[in-house]
Image 1 (tube, rainbow, N blue to C red):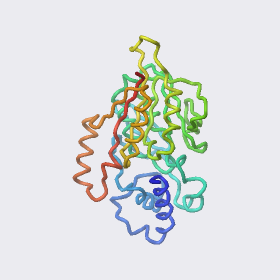
Image 2 (cartoon, rainbow, N blue to C red):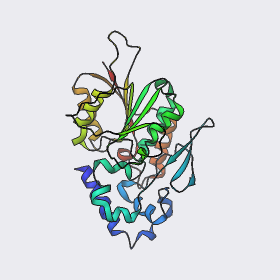
Image 3 (cartoon, rainbow, N blue to C red):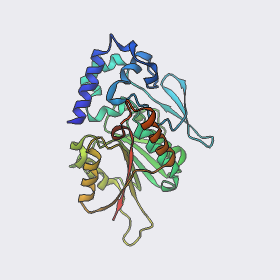
Image 4 (spheres, rainbow, N blue to C red):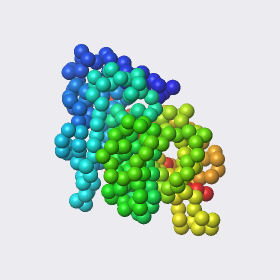
Length: 294
């Protein structure tokens, strides 16, 4: 119900703000390649006045293309296409609503945090076959893994066939719908996912995908460790509900990391003090869930 409510809020905000969109404080604007009117509308949606932790400096190269600075003289050219407000108004019901389309509205803070966490723990990914689930408009975390973490291969997936990650990406990408009745054959050493547990109705399907594609290590060989890494905020009881489901099958060792990076924790505490009006730890601070086979 919470996910449906957010989409109703999104629709009402878009349809009601055409006459008032220029009255917003520009300090609350989301930085995106859209024009200012589109940005002002998007900044109202689902507490998006909090712009994330800005873990990477970003420069606009040209329309829709940005350069992310990944440190150590490594940059990443990323296409970020935020839908225009007029498109959200006219095609909202079909193209931009529902679970499969949340990743096409913006890059959510958890996606950036997941990319940063992966980059800081690059040893987990070296020479591994990695898959990102629900990568959204550009699968930022997966691209960061490809650029910084020396994987053997990277596969970017999303359920929406129109998602931009299927274009202009020099690596394997494919549509992957989560369905507990579907057989998934390809196996991966590492599976990553950002902010994909907000809709509890999808939890059984996501769990089935994880069990299907996460490679099981050979018997009596704990050195060949595979792992599922989820980065997501609490969002009410949705994250806890997924962790409970994950633990209930008694197949995984599950670890919940709250303070997993000093820089991110410091930015979180700073946001609690300086953005009291709209920073909500339940919505804006992503936690890390690590799960490996028992």
